[in-house]
Length: 160
Image: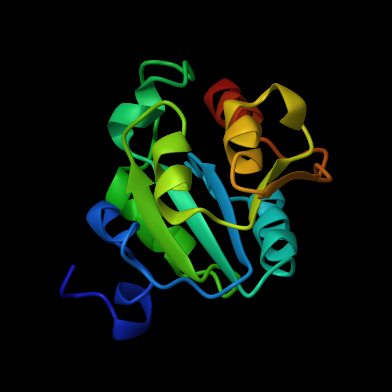
């Protein structure tokens, strides 16, 4: 990643460093595939960033993405490409990759103050919410921006 501008390079946190970082507080954490970045993602991430001093985005690795059941040809964009695109957003303070089906290991390692997901998630049903509460953290669903879905966009492109 030496070809990256320093402003992007410093936002990308190796998985092994997540536990040893001194994070700005309050730290907001979210995760996702972010396969084809669209307006819904950008709006959601900007809203998440406004909730704390910093926003850490955990991106599903290619292996983790395949565990999500989105289809054999997903993700469309490779993990490094998705990492760099999300890191380029002004609202994003830091990004990292994770290989597991859920980001629970990362959550436990960095212990953010707030875990956020889009409004299409039932926060009470998530393992992440139970984990956050174990150290006094909170979980919050940010209102979903209707009409923006990577899956729907991919289906529309394929059908065109």
